[in-house]
Length: 87
Image 1 (cartoon, helix red, strand yellow):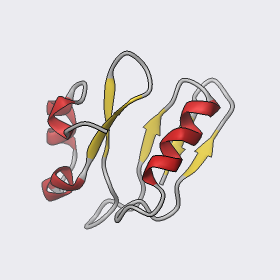
Image 2 (tube, rainbow, N blue to C red):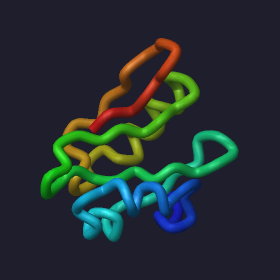
Image 3 (cartoon, rainbow, N blue to C red):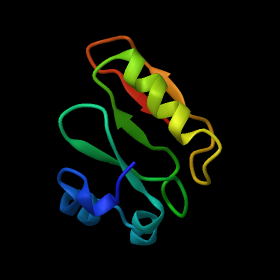
């Protein structure tokens, strides 16, 4: 995991998330050539997701998030045309 501000398109997430304090508790992960932020749930945010190119990367993301505050139930949605790790 890297700092959330190092994530690809971090400004997009800053504008989109109403509870900006969650960004201080987030992190960014590399599963492809770019890193995307993993923003925890809390405040008005009830669910989150992280894009994964395949199930194996989705499982790795879940392993990294398991037990962290704000990521209550990491799981993988897929395989399909859009595999994601959900929390």
